[in-house]
Picture 1 (cartoon, rainbow, N blue to C red):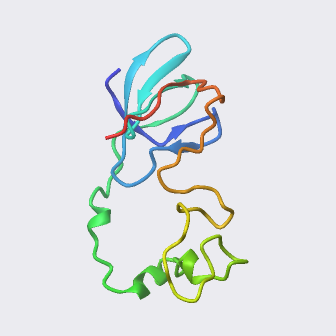
Picture 2 (cartoon, helix red, strand yellow):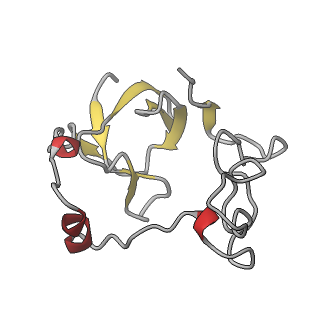
Length: 139
């Protein structure tokens, strides 16, 4: 209890899936006979079975995001492709597409498939929380 961990398995034997980005960690808050309660970096409290594996310590390379890339080509070297905004597309390619000029969309921001994508919670309210004790705190 009180340990700092990372690379946590969601299911036993499936390999680590949580807290793997540079500089992240989670804290063990409590432990009972079957589950360990862990506070994630997103402030979410969640139970994990004790059979699941994790790595002790915080991930390194904390200042990775401070690197100045300098030009768009560096992102291309890293495998990132250019992004095209929805309002630059045709109406058959994106809900924001079309129009004779690049005016903003006439609706709330949506993805290519029409699903709200900014400031819109997509988790079903009827879906059970299961092992999640507390969703993440905003602000």
